[in-house]
Image 1 (cartoon, rainbow, N blue to C red):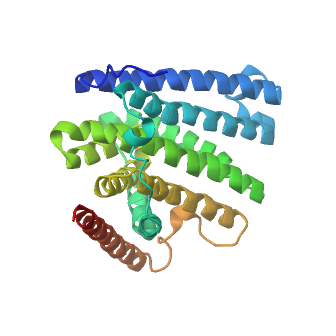
Image 2: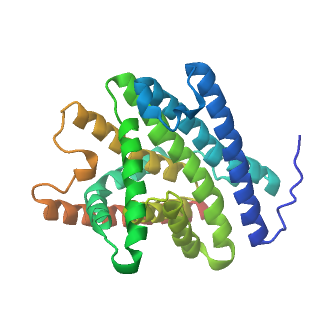
Image 3: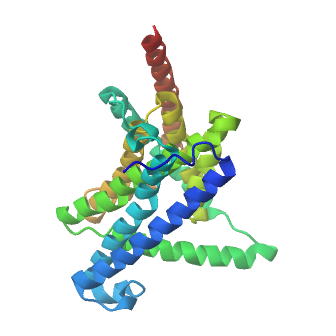
Length: 309
């Protein structure tokens, strides 16, 4: 059934408001059904989500299931519904109809990989920020929330075997990469770019993307990641490259934690580039990252020019 494109000629403020309402509605429905299904599947009490650690591996499995379901409801469904309300096919509106270039997909993955040491260094600095005086109580509250989130992430990243690795890659790397790119780079960024231009759209979307995670002590690395992903979309006019880059960033962390837990590597992913000769690794990472980023732009521009002739 065709949905009338009643959002097509509406104001930016109204479209943003309706997008938020769609996100809240879809997230609420997805959370309700994920909780309902998980309680039926694992036969646990209603408060099991709040006290998941008390139920061991069963509680963790339930948390992973509900997280995956809720993520799809919050990030994947709203862009599809919004595209229909605009009056376009979701595949076209979300810049997914063009067949991606394999070399550029590989380049996008490499681009993310070479950034890790200097992004980790930025994360360590971000994590070391402290607020004093009148903001101390706010700081303490945010730090407590961050520690609780870190504990939950640690439970998610506990991977005794290869099956656990695969499940975690899907839940932590694949679903967020697809969903967050659909919503932020597929809908929010083009929406904000309409009147203020692409740069405004990229930077403001990256800010919202990082802020919406509500983890201040990782805000700046996530913000920079959002900026890079945003420009990949601007330069290639396709969401495939930011999805692959986003997935690579998440997947490297998951695989790195898996290797660290099984003692195949000494450092966990958050510490890559921060050990011995850290300054050298950070500088090399930053240099290679900038060069890779500019090279991607150069070849993307050349390809666009070739397509016009």
